[in-house]
Image 1 (cartoon, rainbow over the protein chains, first blue to last red):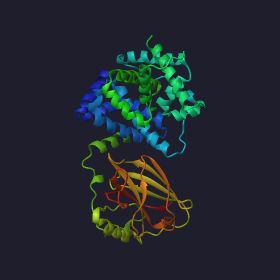
Image 2 (image 1 turned 180 degrees about the vertical axis):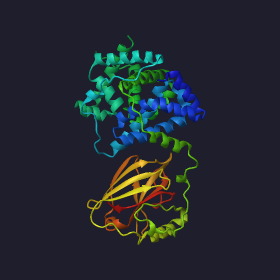
Image 3 (image 1 turned 135 degrees about the horizontal axis):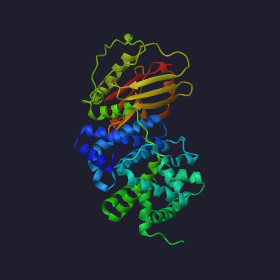
Image 4 (image 1 turned 120 degrees about the vertical axis):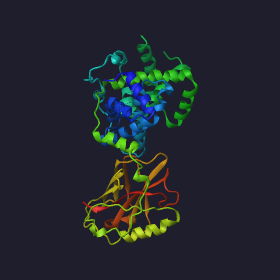
Length: 186
Length: 244
């Protein structure tokens, strides 16, 4: 499993047009990116198309990686998620129901079978802390965050799921974030 | 505790909404402009982005099929794509030899040549393979010659419903793909712009009488579609409706 530093090197080399580095970047990261796209888009063909589009964007914009200070995986995931959310918006605007997670339990913890290199140790402990804080805070903020992040839920979707007005969802999110910040900083 | 939210709380919330995709589109531009100028907002954005990435840590990696990488390579690194360089094929193309297989004709439809080209295309297509018989479903594979753009179409003659599913190929940046209905020697009828993935629409009533002699075409147009009501850009893909 490549370290953060290795992925940054691949990105820098990709930005200068190195195709072998781009292939290495793809091999190192597409598994996680594809998993995220599958969660958001559900349909396997759509997820494949999106994966293609996302890596074309990554090739074209690799030079922008450093611009806003995100870690490499976060930057790649942001490109993927933004692309998928755009696709979901297009589908939504045409009206027909799209499948959504009625049962949120399958968005819970699934152990990652891949062994971690040392460079991932820090990320592991942060992940544990996030999960612990979300457990402590409970619903609805955990559901709102997971629903929006992993399932592409809009405020409207969440309002329907919780059966409350849209502004209530927003208020819950605001309050939940305050508590989450406190928990994460301890 | 009901204190009114501080600007910092507001920034925190807006940053999370932006990362999650909850921010209304109208507010996204403002946010991005502020992000470029306001350090404290950028700190919220980075901190929350990194924190929320943790939510993917629970996902098991999913190995994509090999074909995805091949398509990425083709799009980025293949020599000058034929999809942007249509070739004029002689209309003496022997249709009677097609034996039910899908073939494509490349035509340059541009400017004042449109009317003549369309009539010629129409003449070439009329009297082709026997019309589909019976009221069954009709399908077409609307494909580019190099197969870098493929859209599958299905028509239910009873309802007039046309369903389109994109298999591969997307419009170039700033351009759109417009779908046209070609029947007999009539001028192409626009069926609208192709969506990213699936499109569903009802065919015009007048088209239903002649489904056995129908070609669907995709042309390259400016974003928003042809400004003239007829194809203005290159024909990218063609497919003939045949009975299932």
